[in-house]
Image 1 (tube, rainbow, N blue to C red):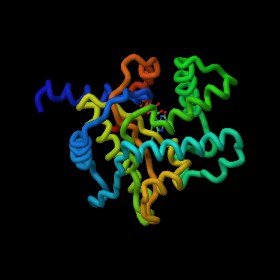
Image 2: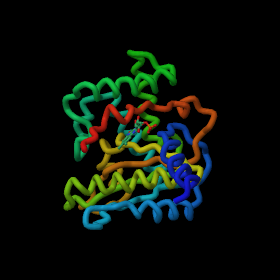
Image 3: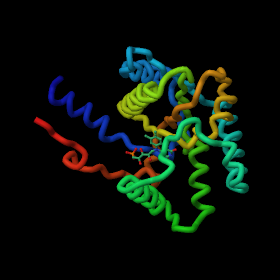
Image 4: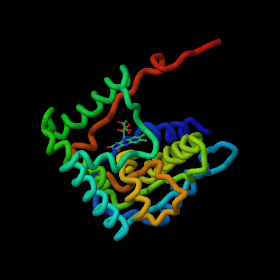
Length: 234
Ligand SMILES: Cc1cc2nc3c(=O)[nH]c(=O)nc-3n(C[C@H](O)[C@H](O)[C@H](O)COP(=O)(O)O)c2cc1C
């Protein structure tokens, strides 16, 4: 690879960030196929390729949004209902510890700050949470599922596939937001997808063209310096 090519790869990786406002602009299906073809070069344990992807657009997308937003609104009005919508696997810890909780808070308040949401403004927070289930207006939703018979390692494989999707999308002028939020509503999601009983929802990715005018998309998150998370042993 030439130095220029290295720079292009690095740029595709470092310019990716989570976009939370998309334009009402369709994505060509061939482009989505190209992205998935490239992304499927992701490694997987013993090449099991455990990912399955549902590409949801048009009326199906609207049906998904309508059903899940309705459920989320019901939960907001009656938090007791949240028990019905537990994730199949815990993405986050039950008990948070430092420094992770601090980074999580910094991230949340950074985003809310940009959106002018102050502490205690529960309605505004609920509205922003609902934006997840409106796909932040992205025209395409990618739902990644795995066969329940597979081990936890398959979720690592799928994560690598998802990262590839996000980078390949970025290289084509598209943006993404990975979303664990949908996992709570997996029974509804899987029903709308008409997925077989042996499938489990792993993650959702909103895909589309970023709205360059929206302030939420100016949110760029920090990263630790290499020295803080790496141990070099010789
Ligand atoms: C598996 C996964 C699930 C995520 N779920 C959500 C989500 O449900 N809603 C959301 O707004 N962002 C979600 N994010 C985005 C993270 O908040 C974001 O990646 C992180 O703050 C770093 O910012 P960046 O992606 O802009 O670099 C998720 C990210 C990952 C990797």
